Length: 424
Ligand code: HEM
Image (tube, rainbow, N blue to C red; front, side, top):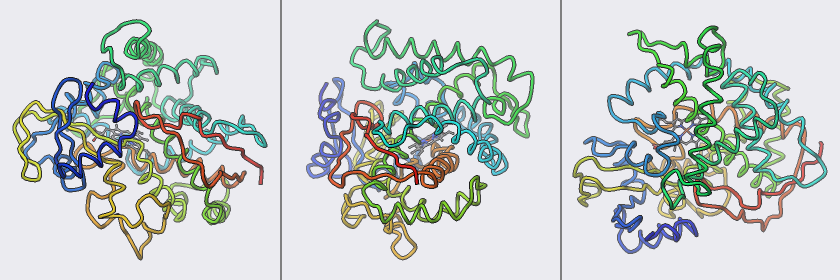
């Protein structure tokens, strides 16, 4: 297993030790092979920019979650990726984002209606349910006959697919992470394929329908398999990352009542259902979101695989090397950030702009051709949830609380991050 267990215990500590010993390109042993850790903005930036096309996504991410998110946009490369990305880009134009924003508010309102107040709730799990409900609404246009139990099963299927990243038995074996993930994938496919004929037949403004009907100027369109593969990856990418971000923001705002008040004042000034420009004008919420994405990057490590020999920061990396890019580690480097572990959203303010200390100092959405295609949508979703939470509730979190993060796949608080919402 090599460094796998050390990673799961404390990834940043593991990366720090390698940085101190080797610098920006560090050998590391994992799954019986020598891999390369790329540490700091220079090494990560070189891999993300990928000037000599030596780094591929597919063979790297496939080793972690390949069978479950196969042919998702993040798992395909080069010309194939370029073609699919051009089509998918059509689903994220400014006009489409305006439409999604209009649908966001009622979806958030419906999802938040069931939240208990005055009693402790596990914020992470509630938000995960909420973002999945939003995804079902915005991505699928509602889920017709599917009730709460069915949606819970869908949520568990996504969780199983994501948790496969930490599987040790990497085959379809019952009672293992991969076994559960294979079952989850089959469930998701059945679920989505059931809606496909109706989505092909009529045009609506949800992402499922958009993927069924979009066409580039050259007439390129997605096949049925493409639509299903992209939907499964998109729904996972959209709901997991937004959940982690919103959970972290709830924690920090609960520990910093001054920031909570500042954000609330902005939210209340906007009215009940702000449009995209309105959400984008939530300046303090934006600073807090950037800081939360720095301190708790939802994707703390990116992975790549070298398809030919290459050189990073003067160090030769041979072909067929699995590489991990230390995103979270870079976000905490004192060389680029003042008091890096302290919550200080003003560091992103116009007077300081610490994120400009290096082009790749802050990269929660990655960079280069695979940079997150949903980053604007994700920001709008997080802000729409916060806008409603701040407008309706307040909350406190013990200033000494440190989220006990599970690092088997994407980082989440093992205790669910308990929180008590009080109505304003
Ligand atoms: C806070 C929210 C989010 C974060 C932190 C995040 C992070 C990332 C990162 C780091 C990557 C790059 C992966 C790589 O280079 O290997 C990525 C790619 C991607 N993300 Fe996001 N993401 C977020 C929200 C979303 C949302 C809301 C969607 C969809 C609506 C989405 C869809 C995608 C897709 C399709 C890719 C693959 C892009 C490509 O390979 O061309 N993400 N995301």
